[in-house]
Image 1 (cartoon, rainbow, N blue to C red):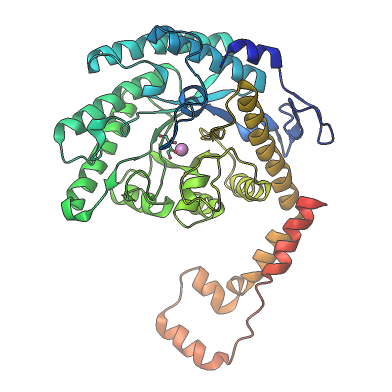
Image 2: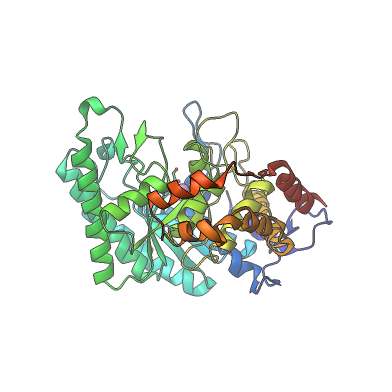
Length: 438
Ligand code: XUL
Ligand code: CO
């Protein structure tokens, strides 16, 4: 890929939903104020460094299809060129934020010390680019899953030296997050799980993992990090079973270990579906616990059972996601990170730009439709009425938790057969279709 190809495309402008110019936004109009805020502040789009600037299209059966060396051969120069390309890509798309793993931004050294020194050089470089382009770090994370040493896990490794190395990488990445004024620090436990329980002391691994999160939290807070620590749940892949299985599991774990004040959830759409949930379910679960933080926007393929990280195109799903996010009060420290990659044969700069345009337009349209759903009010009104029996009589006592089991027993004996009302699902689904397609 060449930066000149990016410059040829130029800045992507909003041209409305009817126009057919491929390098334009049909729905995303960053400065437009809707529902009390600019669209860009509702959506807080972020570029994923790894898919966008590093992934070259390899899979189990095939080699790279996209060259992301950016015409450099020296390792450090290559990583600087990656960064240059990334910041210009954000410029032309009007994306204000980015997210990275430690290993995405700098080449590896011969040992940990040299790796950290190269990392520091690149943090200086990124700091300069942030100032030059007016961009912000949404979140960073340590990649404690790719290297061979992490094959049995990192914070859940049976090997204490591996645990220490993972901790060192987290420390280094927290320091960088603070320097780059990032507002989030993510833990995605790629290999924090197991392949078989036959070789696993699950209790020890979970205790070690909780302690790892505590150490990281305490260190970050001591250094003055005010942003969110985030868990990104995923049920499996690469391991057979991942401990942060889904939002409810992660929240239970965080509460058990008294980490819930500092941690929030980074919900990824494709991880939700792998866990057998809808994205909406995962967002609602985080929100009702006051732990909604950020999202990784992508989607899977209904026929492929793994984390394919497609750019999001499903407006229905994006609408319901934005509906949940608006109801949760919108993004604070979080945002919409496109943890998404172009398909392997979509291997040009143009494809990358078109993929981001589609993803951003999908969420912009989702935002518009979610606002329309809220303003329409029929869904809210229906749900409110559905639970109306808890606003009076015995229901009010239940809602206020002011009733005994004996009182409910006496009440039930006199209540007679209740008239239970329809859930009206199909009607409610037709409202969504009406809002989406008319
Ligand atoms: C993997 C995944 C990661 C995390 C960051 O499924 O989602 O890219 O977002 O480590
Ligand atoms: Co992710």
